[in-house]
Length: 397
Image 1 (cartoon, rainbow, N blue to C red):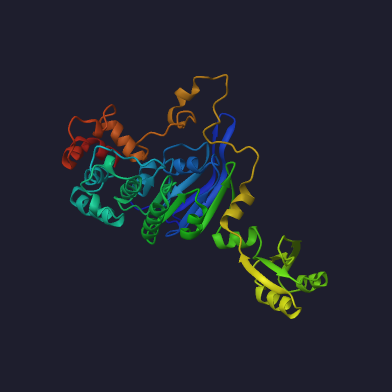
Image 2 (cartoon, rainbow, N blue to C red):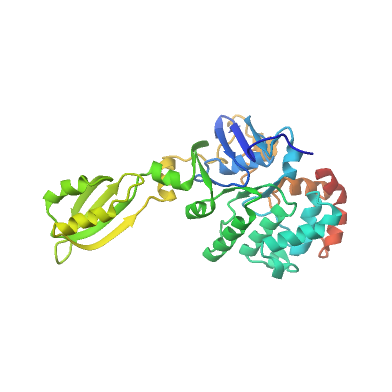
């Protein structure tokens, strides 16, 4: 079924989600173009996970709309789920399966045709660098490889949109680089939106970033534009001696210089430290150095610093009391509402289930709600798992 014509892969319009009287997100608006990698940034409790769960159909919104590939996430939920790959913060893995068994299981549930499953599984294994781990039990994999398996299950049905919630959380620096490269390799024909706390990661791999704070979007732009517009331009720090106060106007009058600060520092030759702040998109370092040398100032050190995405993030999200998206419970007059609301309740969401992919969760519950595949007395084979979930897979697909 072809979706309605749309210029954007993801469209979010005035999306809000409230728990009682507390808003987890409020009037969130952003778009993601086809083929883009967009970073969704914000402090803990800002509303990132809530937004992603609404986009995947895991949570209903209180108000507003969201569309994936032209399909409404509320009224056309199953069409949306066919077109997304979702990796939650805790990958939905079955430790008792091998990598191959698990990916066949997921491919079956996600509606991949029987004749295409082997090729789909092999493609996702190769894309995520799992060739040497195909017959390894998932419980024996390192955290980095488990994250790769999580990525593989998200793309096994070749979706046009991939949603990743903290894909590198808990990984060591080497594993972060590996997963980062995997994400870059998945882009191109696919659209990717990812949330992360690792800001250098966002600036390295994202075409654009959207920053959310206290449930509201506070900035959307390329990392480069945000760093130049929100924080200011380049800064130069110099250690000099033979400084003369009469030189201050000469430095301040250089084109691009915004501010000069001079401070004496402890040293045998009575040095001074100059802090020169420049306007955005200007780099008058050569002129500053040449002027100082012409007036007999000795330069011992000169270094340039540029604003980072971290500076932008701190400027936009500094707050006294961050609101947790799962701390806002229902009114105290209704103490049992958390149980009644089920997965919508912030208390019910506090402990994330092992199976969080909406499609996998629905199909697994339908096939055997009390006994996941890894709880079977014997290790399941790919065919046994697929046969045991045939009816559920067809229903969810």
